[in-house]
Structures are given as structure tokens and as C-alpha cells.
Length: 130
Image (cartoon, rainbow, N blue to C red; front, side, top):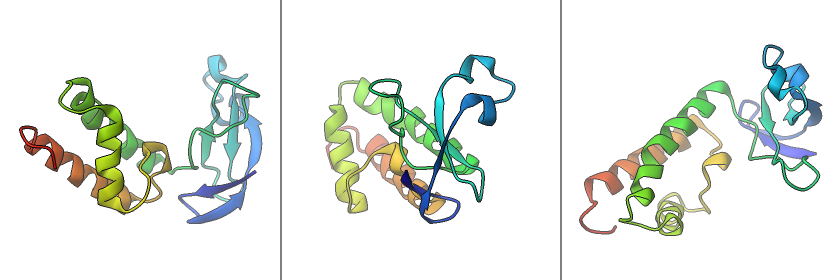
């Protein structure tokens, strides 16, 4: 499958593997599918529905994965509070970054930092929608 790799900063030919390769110490993940970059060895999980081979997003570095977790930790409470609908928050972020927003598609540390900045604006401007 051709998929964007954030470490290689290009679309690469990923190889389908299982959790037995990428999570040696997590036997509970051994039967799940993952797409791996043969060059940098970063990987992405797959949706469990369908044939179980659709990637959850692009292949991210450990640092970008951690930044995505930080984004969700700050973003999710905004729409869960009821101040905004989830789709509305994603539309705001899409307009800000100039492309359709989805956390799993963040392609660089710089992009993640930009998203965090816009989330801070949402947090600070919770009284008025931006």
C-alpha cells in the first residue's frame, strides 16, 4: 500500500505486518494488522472493521504520535463540553490549516504545533466562536 510516512516525508510503499513484529512485548496486539515503513521502521495500525487492512492514518514518528495524543487530550474536551460540535471543531481547524483536518493525518511536528496553537485559541475563545 502507498502511504505517507512522516519520518521519510514522502509516500512510501508500506508493508503489511502484524503486532507480533511491531509490539513484541504486547501479545494482545499480535493478531492486529499494521502498515510499516521498511526504511525507518515506523508504523500505523489498521481499522478493525472491514478487512482489517485500512490504515488509521499516515505512518507517524514516535514524537508525532505523542503530539497527536496531546492534541486529542486538549481537543476532545472542547467538543465534549458541548460548546462546539466535533464536526464544527474539525471544520475550524480545517479552515485554519488550509486542508481537511484529521488528527491521524498530521504529517509533521510543525503541523502538530500549529494545530496545538489553534486549539489554544479555541480554548481561550470559548465564549465566542472563531
